[in-house]
Length: 136
Image (tube, rainbow, N blue to C red; front, side):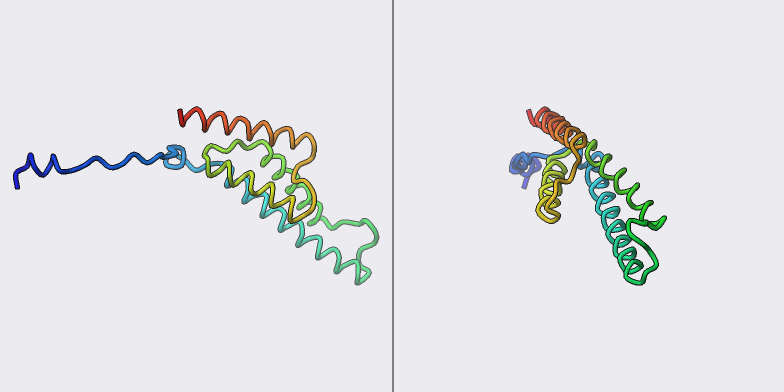
């Protein structure tokens, strides 16, 4: 087989849409979601510890352990950071929306406080504009 025939028989690969940001660097929304998940888990674990201490009479009323106060602070920081994080990929945008929806379903409350909800909506809008701009 001649080289010309071999080269000519190679059909170009079909174009596959690629979200180049997934290749260049990871979408920051995934780290923000994981940090929030970890903080929520730590918060609930410390709440369970406090409940056990209350049942034993070692904590009264609204008393909080230093560990619980620290997890409350970190959880609030993670939630604020999450609300301000702009997804950079379509898969990140979908993950962000699914995480917020699942949180609402699981906990029966909205993920974000009112000001954070404003941040969330702005982040979603910016991500959609950015992703749509790369697709055109």
